[in-house]
Image 1 (cartoon, helix red, strand yellow):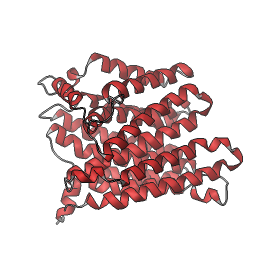
Image 2: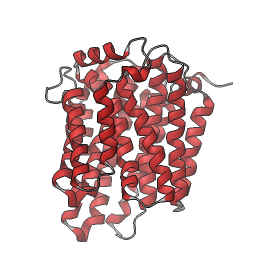
Image 3: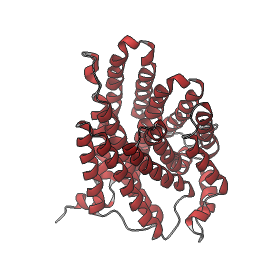
Length: 375
């Protein structure tokens, strides 16, 4: 018979996936640590898998498998759904370390497929519509599956970019367009969105036409090689940041969490604009997005999840430790992006960046992961 915590962990899978996500993040980060003393070959495939399919995918699964049943007022997660995702993730990780790239791509596709199937079942049985911006999440998951499958069949750079950046960016835009304005205190945006989707209309009919157009051009931008595609992509991200997240205004909710998220979101916009003006450094600019858009924003959103599902104490969102974590992640990102300046010490810079990022993650985990368990 399952203990109470085990039951709550299955019903709210973030309780399982967030701790494992932190372990994957630390593991993937510290793979670079030996480069400080002995620069040599580096485990690219294992690093990518740990960061995208370990940390990022696990946090996405934890958040969506917890939030969507609540948004749609449908059934919570089943044990088999949680177990299947966890198992596929571990099997893919083993294959990544064995350098079986095609099998790791297959595992990646299965991860996204499990999440997509989970969401689709809940949305089809929903009592109320989810936020219309969540259509971007479904698009992101489809892009994730398609790009992973194409990674098995081809070495196309377009599909690689779609897999490692585009699919995740789409999910962030979808989740962020509902959560970010709410956390920043822009209740008028949240109310306007709710007026659109809290109706008896089918979910897809609640999505404004211009939102579909924005999604179309975002996807197409990854197949327009060169400056045009990069510029279109940056324009869409900036548009979402300014008009959906209202970043041009200071947060109305004056907490450490809201200020940190506001800074993180501006850095996401900056990372996409950086590619427009620095096309020779696309790989470095992509890491700027990873640090600010994925690691930093993920930990901050997770802070809200842990607080609201755990002790329900808003003071936890106003702790100064969040500023320390934010500054350290930004510093780690700058260290990584600037590594190209000294090519002879490039790999050592990756090691230095990994130390800084690991400290930030450990500080956050030590303060907030304790609320995973029911109080």
